[in-house]
Structure formats: structure tokens, C-alpha cells
Length: 175
Image (cartoon, rainbow, N blue to C red):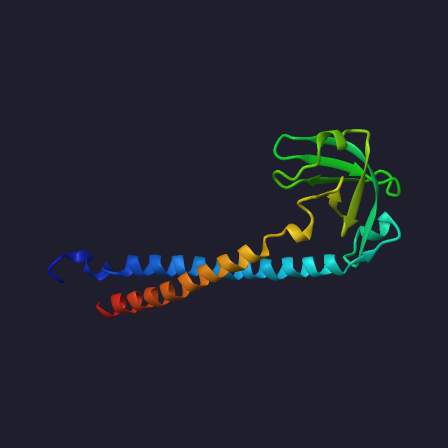
């Protein structure tokens, strides 16, 4: 038994464990953010390449076309962000909810219940309404910041993992 008592065999193990856990979380988050970036980049490419659809029904389940037409405003609210619910005459009984980015909502006088507004439907989502982009517009996805954060976490996680493994080997070797 060492001079510090019976706890000597634990010296360095909690630090090694914590370092490895933090590194693993950083690297897993890095991978997840990279996957989200790749997915979002694919959505953006598909959105930009989409041709015009001939009907709203064509734009429900496909990324290959976008429908641009008039939508009936069913309701609007400004509680937790500006939200609008719209319907298309060609899709009876079906409504679409969408939110606007902070500070990007259309003028309230242009978007009231019972009005009609120009809307874009792509992949089953309203991407533009009353001349404004919605949160469902892929071009609004934060792809560059995701990749930058993933790079930062990767550059943080790899050295932490190396340090954690080194600490663990040292702690178990000293027994």
C-alpha cells in the first residue's frame, strides 16, 4: 500500500475516464453534425435543382419539383414565432403549417385568415409564403456553421481522446 492510503489505485482513473467521455461526446457530436451538414447540403441541392410542378399534388412527396401558386390562409399566430397554416385548393382537406425565421415574417396586413397568398410547396412543405422564406426553405439551413462546429469539436475531441487514453494506460500501469 502506498503512502497516501488505500485510494492510491484510483489515482488518475477518474481523470482518464472523464477525459475519454468528453472526447467521445465531442467526436460523436462532430460525426452527427457532419451527417446533418451532408443531409442539409443534399436538400439544398435538390431544392435548387427542382423544376416547376404542374400541380400542388406533384410537390407533396418529391424533391424533383416545386409548386408555386395561391394558398388560402387558414390561420396565423405570433405566439412562439410567426406561424401560418395554409391550404391549397387542389389539395382539399389538407393543411400545411409553417413558421417564419425570426424577423422574416411577412407584413401582418399581407397574411390574415381568409386571405390568399402566393406560396411555394416543395417536398410536402411550404418553403415560401407571401414573398417571404419559411423555416422549411432548405436555403435557410445553417450548413456552414454546422461544419465549422464539427471541425472545432473534432479538433478538440481527438487530442482529448489521446490524452485520456494516455492517462488511462498510465493509471492502470501504476497498479
